[in-house]
Length: 480
Image (cartoon, rainbow, N blue to C red; front, side, top):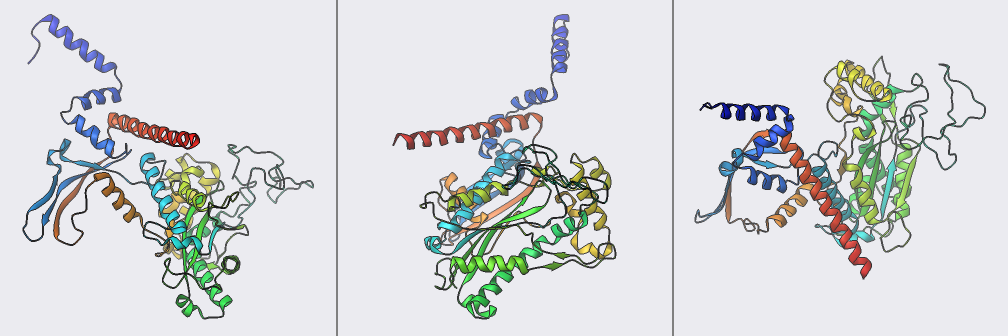
């Protein structure tokens, strides 16, 4: 109905003018709070922890007694706002969704820690097994700017000076801070082996696989048995995480453990010591190699680990003064599982064309690596490396975290246990006496402008609540 009086018309015009002056987010917020299902929507977003990009599903789940057909539990989204239910996006990258990345990092901590101290279905005796924390790096592809080292506080001091074949200095006498944008950049981009860098990334997964097989072979040789009989005596288990360095190269942090032939529940033989495992880890790193497919443009490259190799025995936290403890290693691995190439200055979205590389908000070094990926990806000899699909990761195709089957529990088991704990309901299918009927479909994802603001506030409240709870626990511990 149209306003019939001058006063009513002015009121409508004034309201329209006020709305016009509001931002798009403010107008969307007004729309959102007037939705009849707004309180329930808030509850749903609270339940997701303020997920930044929830997935919306529509459907139902019904649990029936297998013998009588009685409905024991039923849930349907028809009564929810918009007829849909939001679930977490479960993105591990903090740059995409901080709440889900934190949850994933927490799961990773417990997954890695269970393989070090037991629990979550892993025998406690793993604490007594030989365990190492190993860091494997990429080789040098050219000199890059770096922060101070143990030997010198300067980047690349060269008393004799000198220049490369392109007329650039071979050294750098500056002291770079940790936030200096020059860190990781090559001293001479023309001297830098971008092709070797990209091909190493593309072959890193295969290099790791062969490395693990080589460690087993060296263990068998040290024990004087054949590799085929090694499993009769022990099992090699591992969990590793990939981390991008400032120069855009990946290196791996790995927990390596020796178990008996039955896995974590059985002790390794007496001859399988920590010293023997360390010797096998070091000798395998020095000998393993992978060869890339031959191409007239690149030749056949030999892929090896870098010379920098760190190996530390993992100690129990009962050992005072030891930095490499069970909890410290688990926390270290969990910290890096939520990171990506974006934390090294790159982007975490797929590249689809050359113009996207040219316009990408990255430094010149990473742009050159992306361009090399795209160029090499067009060579028919390197088609199997699928480099163009992995241009945004600089050619690296591996998962951020991988583990052997017997190392510890799985992400799925951890999520199931958490869901049961939060719902405070006992599982209904412990003895196979129930039948579950489910039908779900994807109906959307993400937030509107106002929804994103509210979800970010919820996530911030949750983070602040965790910080306060942590401080309260620390205060209570100090009082004792």
